[in-house]
Length: 496
Image (cartoon, rainbow, N blue to C red; front, side):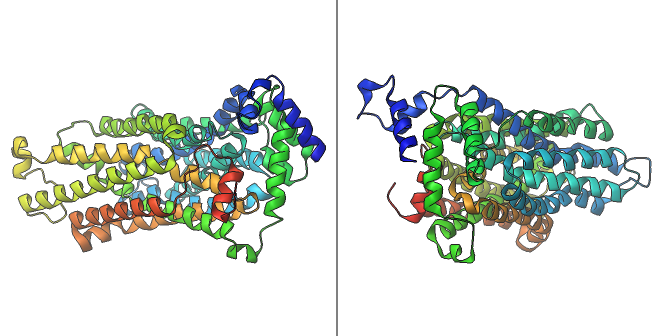
């Protein structure tokens, strides 16, 4: 090992003689890196989140058509339509647990390739559906694949990317999710529900094919004792000029420090329970921001603002998400995760509070405690007296804030903070928390509004956003510009 490190150091010093002692070994190494094939591998992987986005977006154009379809065997009533939309989250929660086992047993690459199968089978069952239960089964299978994807892809990208581009690459996960949602909305304007399902099956098919030509992550290969394959993977990802031996030696040193496999005693280790706590709370707070509630009301809000075509309105909402998630990806490695989370939390706290004001004033105006505007109301008769501008501004401000921070960053940070030996277990707990809370919040949202009124519900979300700001300031570490090994030392409290 010493000989390899000495040889690697000599390789690093080559062509950088005058900078010796001024720049770190890491900087010298990264200056030799070529990112082309890294971007190619990331592109192949993020076809998974694109598929995931199509799954989430599919229900919006499909439900209205299935609710009015001539075939009584496939026609959805209100309760069935609700389950058709939300049952994906149950499959995703199960997929998160399955993904945690898969990444440790068969690796990141094979997990990605295998998770394309339930996507394809699920959409095939939807296409061939003869009754409502076949629709449910197809949605559960695509949800299962989405849960595996939401765990594996962030891990894969974080382990193949270096610290100069890891934030941007990791943010592309959420960017492709919202791009998939927008793609499903747009395709749904022109295709019926069966052809839309065929369209949605294309990205996972492409992912399975492209991932055949991409490498496994060096960290997983080294954890399996496959040093030669790990060096080949590094050469593929970093280019021929970067000394693969040096990066592999650095990863092995950190792995030696971390020890072997996960045991119950590890849960007492601050290097395990601290990042696990941070990961769980990030996922919980992401759902408590009120994102599902905002999207639930989006169509109604646009109708009140006199947008005649609600399909176009949903595409506009999705486009806003895509644009600002792309902005977040571009600035992630400059601004840092913590600053963006704080700014995002402030934006959502203010906008959900404004939503509460909107619903309060609207209910007082119309005598409607739900806050929803009736067609016969004075507001509809007199648009000038309307409050729709407040709702539109609040929604735009909220979606912008969510897309810049709390949309992409919890998934990115989850992929960065866990030691290698606990990544599968810890990530599956985080994914289960995210999808489990998403299901609970979605299914109990109407009951919450009945109990607290619409205004009270959104003020509750505003309070949760204020709490997530405090949590970020106190407990979330800044991971910008740090290697995965350096991030883990932050939690252990040992020097880098």
